[in-house]
Length: 315
Image (cartoon, rainbow, N blue to C red; front, side, top):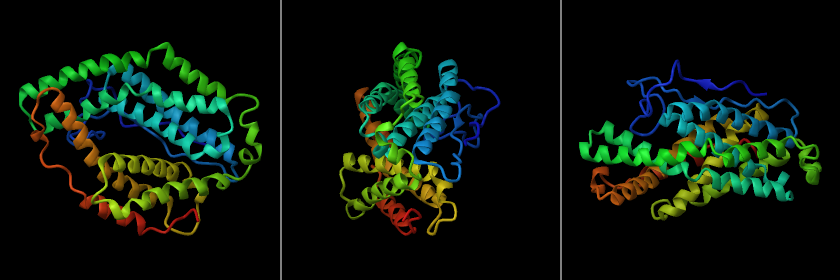
């Protein structure tokens, strides 16, 4: 079972008030963030793969339900971030449990729609992170004014999306599919198998994709690094979703892997964030030199090395 969402709040702050320079939540010296983070998922002992899939998705939808109305009402950057994270976790859950649903055409349709519908939220998040950095580093007033204008325009798309019939239909269709009477009957053998019949292979697949880039980290293109980071997110979410299923398993604990993978994601993401920020600034005629030097790859190598030093718990 899963407990209710964890909130860092007492009350909502003005939009964006709690965003830090890195776009993270609740900076120690700033106002309390209204963001509601995901809660740990506790899978029952002996849980089946199908039940774990459903519980993982329910955990993501609970996370979404806690942040979506707060964002629509208060337009706070941190609630937008957690809304996107909750949906990304749900999409990662589909990827991790793909063998259970891959023969279901309706599931393929839902997964494709889940990706497409949230694309307009990305530009809003990008400018939130950049504007928070501009404030923290005291960029010129004209630059900050330009970024605030871009934020208004991207939010003019993001907020209505989460109130649109298409969004409500997406959530309703996902819920109806999860609750359907013959859910995943096409792979009942795997649906009703012990959870590790799916999760061992799911974790190994993502781990191997991350391991494969190690020798090329200093030269890997930014797009390829971004793809590796996506696989890393799926791996980290899997470590978090499935942690209770591996309680007492030999090897490094899931929490250690999740923490190490988070550090890798941060290092991999810095290069991508620099490119995204430079694009936004360039589009408005602002000198990307404000961003400073391009992120080096040494931290990518060091965090990846620390991850690889751990002992897999799923083998």
